[in-house]
Length: 429
Image (cartoon, rainbow, N blue to C red; front, side):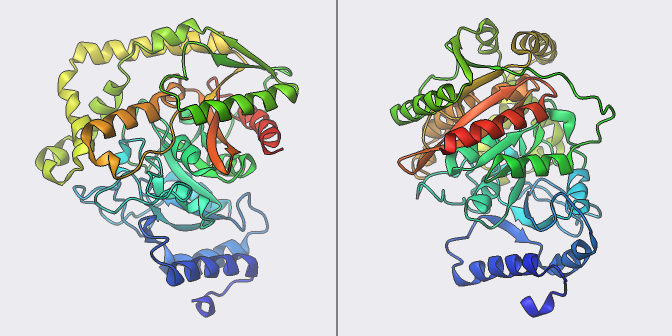
C-alpha cells in the first residue's frame, strides 16, 4: 500500500501506512470500529493535501461518523433499513475538513440512527471499550471515540443530540466537544432530532478539538470579540447532575474539583432553580417525534430491520399529541432564554456521566439497557436542550477515566474552549 501512495507529505503517508498495518496485523483488536475505510481515495487525498501550503488540519487523520455524506461512499447511519445511494458530494462540514487538509480515514460505527448513549449496534457489531474490556464504548459516536482512543485517528467527527460525543469520550478517556448547534452546518448529515442535533467532535485533547471546530464552523460575520468574564464562576449544581452516581466517579470528581479550586478557579456549589424546571421536561419527545417523522415512510415499512432498542424509542412518538409537542418547543425557547440569563459568562461543572460504562452482556436485558441509557444521557442532554456548548475533559484516577464536563451558554464556544484548555492543564498535573 505504501508504494502506491505518491505524496511529498512523507510524515502523513507513514501515519496512514502504520494504521493500515495495524488493521492487517491485529484485525480482532480493531473490529467493529469502522463500517468502511476510504482506502481507495487515500492516494488522491494525499496528493491534494500535499498541494496545501497551509491548513488547520494538515497532517491530521480524521474519522467520520457514518451519518455524514462523504463523496463516493454510502451513508448508512448504522442501519440496515435505509436504502442509500452513493453520496455525490461531501457534507458541508466534511468538505471544510478537506479544505483544511485533514485526511478522511473512514466511516465509523455508531448506534443505529444515533439513537442511544451506549453505542451498541447489532447490525455492524459493537466496538469494545479500550479501557473497560467487555463494556460499552458509549454512543452514539462509538467507533469515533474508539478510533481516537486507539490512536487510529487524531480527530473523530460525530454528532451530539444528547451527549453522543461527550459520553463516549468520558467512557474512553478522551475529550469530547459539543458546539452550539448552528455553529457547524448539518447539511449532508442524517438527522435524529433537528431540534437537538449538533455536529461535534472528539480528540485526545482540547487543542485538537479546537482545531477541528475552527476548520468546520461557519464563517463568523463579526470580527469583534465579545468581552469575556476574566474570573468566571464554575457552578456545581446542588440540585442536578449527581443522581445515581457511582462512588468511584464521585471520589474522582471531588479530587478533580479540589485541583481546579486550588489552581485559582472560583468553584461554588449552589442550587440552580431553572434546573428543577428542566428536570420536568419530557425531552425524549424531541428525538422520538422528529426521528419518526424523518424516517416515517421507510421505518414504517421495515420495522423488522431496526434494532428493537431503537424501535422502542421511535414508536413512543405515538404517545405524543401535536399540542404537547408544540408546547414542548415553546417551553424550550423560554428556558433557553432564562438559562442564558442565569449562567451569563460562567460555567456549569459536573461529571459527564455518573456511572462507569456498563457491560455489553448486561445490556441485553431491555430494562437494564433502558436504565443505563437514561443515566448515561442525563447530564449531557442539558446542553443540547439549552442550545449551549459543552465539553468533556478526561480525568484519570487509578488509570481509569471519568469525564469532567463544562457547560457554557449559546455561542460561547471559543470562550469554553479557552477555559477548558486551562482546566485540562490543571487536571493533568
